[in-house]
Amino acid sequence: MPIMRIAIGNPAEVGQADALKAALAEFISVLIFVFAGEGSGMAFNKLTDNGSTTPAGLVQASLAHGFALFVAVAIAANISGGHVNPAVTFGAFVGGHITLARSFMYWIAQLLGSVVACLLLKFSTGGLETSAFSLSSGVSAWNALVFEIVMTFGLVYTVYATALDPKKGNIGIIAPMAIGFTVGANILAGGAFDGASMNPAVSFGPAVVSWSWDNHWVYWLGPFVGAGIAATVYELFFINQTHEQVPSSEF
Picture (tube, rainbow, N blue to C red):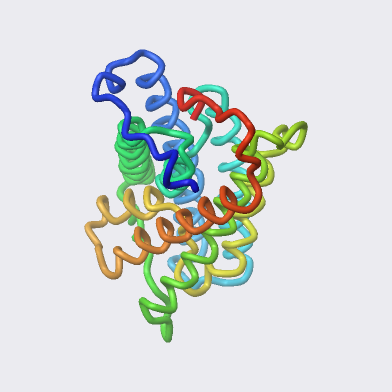
């Protein structure tokens, strides 16, 4: 059972050099990811004079987020595991791949990375709005919650299959690309309905900078529930329990 391998960790872990380096890597990767992803939306708004979102704009957002996440995961993979997402960190915690103490370090670093990215965007664009995630007309909070659960399930399931499974073999090489493709595809599916966050940090930065919190809970509860379900399903049915667990210092 995954729950049996959950580790709280030691408070002293927070001061360890490898843990601090991992948290810094998460901060930098999230900053890069959010700057490119949120920045692509701001660029679209500038080019269209804040016009309505079009299919081309949705494709632009999908490509920007997919490419940026591919890079962000790849550059942090050997240092922190390349989570770049509090929900992914939670999924790894549920499966016993990271301690709770280190998870908190990752979450703080990821949220700070997103806020700093949005502040840099606002400054460098001369004060343009960093729009918070919101629901489209006709989409209820519960509709969006299901979207976020399902999309994040797919994302974290992909993370497990390509990065966390000890049987992954050579497929681990394509993990950053697979993860980026999953997010890009989900944005094409859900972007028109709720923005397709799948990542509480991605939602948190714009919400802080624009100070807009409408339905913000959806972008936390949905990803965490989806991540928890994906981790539990993969651990229960697909990870051979006889394999040695990957040390938490690698995630």
